[in-house]
Length: 356
Image (cartoon, rainbow, N blue to C red):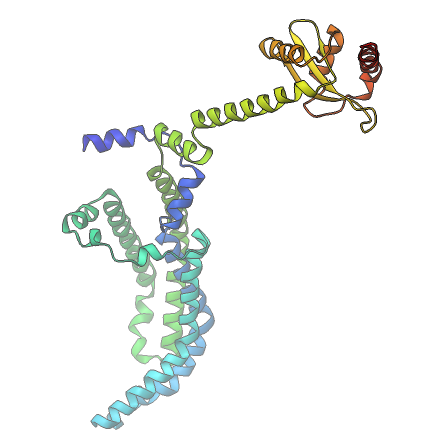
């Protein structure tokens, strides 16, 4: 128990989108039953207000015979079976639309909270659900006790609302035997409408509070430790050490390709020790010289060594070397603003080669 509390205390980070998405895929979503109950009550209020009178008028012809002439009812087995079937069909047809509306509101109560969600994992059988110890633990969990407390309070409040509505109507309720069936049904309709209205008003606050609590509780359960955040980041973005190694390998391969181009360069411009820039130019096929290698310090020294080994001319021009290093990327042409300075260097190299 202490270990579990310690683990919970370490979960200080908000759940990531990936963790929330995985929980949703498993059917673990914040769903408030109070919202569904509130929508069911709203549907009941709508159905009573819209369909109570038509249903009452539809049932009157069916029930009048039983109420006004009970002694004339055929009590034979076959007659009762036929009469019961006809009564069930007529009542079913009258209640079909209200029933479908209530089912639709039940779906709306779920979809409105979590969207469309079909989870096959929840349908699969799980032996953990058959574990009596796990069942007992769930039965006496904080959430179960909280639900029991909420249900008890709601029952008391609903009972009080019902008593507050019935008490002022005791006189008319005592006169029910003297009322016609239609008057009785209309009286019941008025009581049910007012009762559902007040319960609906009360449960609106309960549903809003429960939905907020369910979302808070859901996120709290999915909170992560700092280590879990690091591991998830590592899984999604890649191990920083591996990424660094891959980046180093890419740079090394690029450096190797770059140095391989130095022996074919037309000229290497230096400053003379810290910077080195190698240019390649063919008068017949190229509009402007292309930078094929560049480097500072150690890499600049390596470029100079390769140039000397392969008889590539070295020209000292510190301002131009630094400017080309900063402004031109590998395999890019020299920009126009440096044409004049580079042309002088290239021209000098070509003259030097002709003399040789």
